[in-house]
Amino acid sequence: MKNITKIIAVLFTAVFLLAFYPIDGFNKTGIKRLKRLEKTLDSTLNEYYLRKGSFKKYDEINLWMCEKTDSIDKIMSVDSDFQKEMLRLFPSRSGYGITVLDITDVNNTRYAEMNENTGFQPGSVGKIAVATAFFTELKNLCPEDFNVRTNLMRNKVVKSGNWGLYDHHTIPIYNIEKDSYVKRTVIASDEFTLYEWVDHMLSVSNNGAASIVWREAMLMRVFGDEYFNLTQEQADAYFDQVDKSEITDIAISVVNDPLRNLGITNDEWRLGSLFTNGPDRYVGSKGGSIGTPKGLMKYFIKLEQGLVVDEESSLEIKRLLYMTDRRIRYGASPQLNEAAVYFKSGSFYSNNKSLGTPYGEYKGNVYNYMNSVCIVEHPSGVNYIVCLESNVLSKNSAGAHLYLASAIDKAIRKKYEIEEK
Image 1 (cartoon, rainbow, N blue to C red):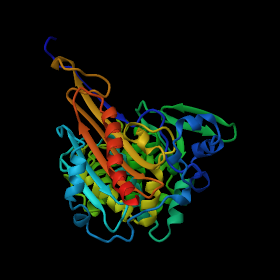
Image 2 (image 1 turned 180 degrees about the horizontal axis):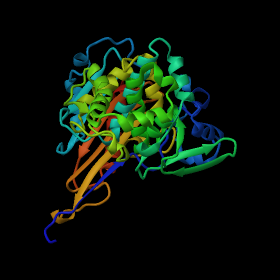
Image 3 (image 1 turned 30 degrees about the vertical axis):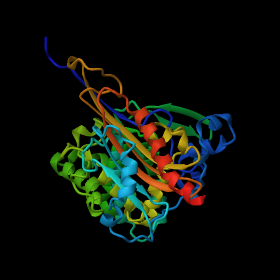
Image 4 (image 1 turned 45 degrees about the horizontal axis):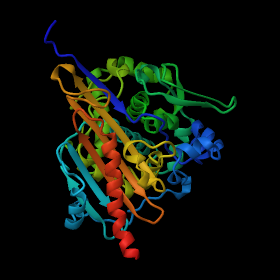
């Protein structure tokens, strides 16, 4: 039929070759791909892909603001000079929202913001909220002993089933005994440890893994101590029998309550649906998803203060966000080559051919969200946090994010280079 608008909506999350977690983390986590990465440390492959800032060890990752007890409002009080410096980098402020916090001197932080309350579709940045829900429910199971929690993550194996379907993003599968390695999409029969599903969710931004991790957080909430010995058959039977509206309410509560407990409001950051269509028969959507630069910054301040769940969980989430492979978008800036980068990126776009404006992959002409959240730590001690979101139509904003990363880094480091002289 003529004049019928065909809208093509594509969810895109961090792509290309991405991996996180310190390279020496296999013995702590049992994540098999880290064993392979360990073995290739001296290879030309890693010399090509890895930046100097990608080689921090497990014990070298720290939280910087644990002793800073100032309120969020005080920390996020705009520094007028810093604000002018940051706003100067945006000739056009339309379509962008950003918050920046310089934590080089934690006793004298500097904060700037622009369109900080504007709501953007968070895309894969929302997977950080899923990780937070997961660690929250872990703590509820084992409030006194973090080692019990990580042992459960290392040893409990769960199956994908329909929850991991369907997603075109591949996951890395390494067989230690055979020394074989493949990358493919998740299939229903896949079984991995909890640690590996969380890693698949964050390291390669696999949507199926995100739904599975969210599922396991729900099961922890529902079954409590019984979760330790919960079989796959019992878990599957529960979802087959439970009322859909009831489990939808549980799903939304599990993933959003931890954000509210951090002082992040419903309008600042929320998730309303799982990341894959496979679980649609079990769990519905509710409330929509939104993220603001202000809400995301609140989260990362709490993370650096060790207040996301608890200090041990905050540190582990930060390790899970540490980039140890090829960097993209904001993280690809050559200015950050020697810096440690803790990063999550995501996109969500939609095209409408009949509008007559340019469109394409990551160039949505209906909406074109791209988000980058990043903690940057330079060897010199210059550390800062950036939450950058954009909705610039008909243009792949990856280049703009990379440019802004370079410009922001240069502006922040300039202050300390001048002071050293």
